[in-house]
Length: 326
Image (spheres, helix red, strand yellow):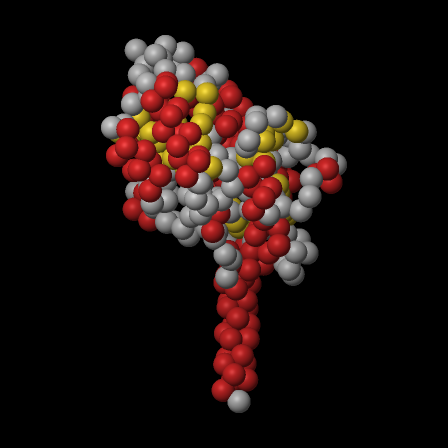
């Protein structure tokens, strides 16, 4: 009997929330401002979308600040937010398999769901081979899961050329949902891509004069795109989810690479306890540096308005230290 009352209470609460969300959306539309309601799954998409949309949309991040992206589990309230939205942007099934599962249950028939990886060439996390990735080509791969995340590197935004394509996909979706603001979205998209181009040029120029060409990462295989774009050798502790652990054999191999290459720095990733980098640093005398994958940010960073571009600026600075750039 208690379980029945509890279930009834949960259903009643969710019904109230759904009605409230729908009313809030209607009130927002009735003001005449025509602000789109946009939901993004990961921080890069949130930052891209808010820069492109400006005041013409209310852009929110579904992933709570401080939560590691790969281990995120959506809650009932997240479905409520999505049902009240006009557009949902996500990176693709290899990065957020939970997003595709959740979106199958959406009741909002007018919701525009956008896979921002459309048109991007995906790299394999293990050997760097690439595959065509588009709506027609996804059938070549099995259903997304933890194994896919290890086999396919979904961190596409870490190549600025891919980030440009993601921006184009976001612009296209915003224009489709709000044609009256086409000029605004197009102009803001071009402005943002120019900033990406400038940062790309700086990465290329400043990393071309480095003593070292290999960087060691005590985390999961996330920086293949960055390494490929700037002709660097990238060695990660393990493939798959950040929750994985390297085997003793992998740790020995990492330590050997550090010593043979004369590498004096080992990188750790954001929002994950740097156990592996700490072990390697302790056993080899190397120093630890952060290399931010930009999946998500801390609550403090989010409150301060940190941006994708500023995260990548910090990455460039830390790479220059670790690679001993002149």
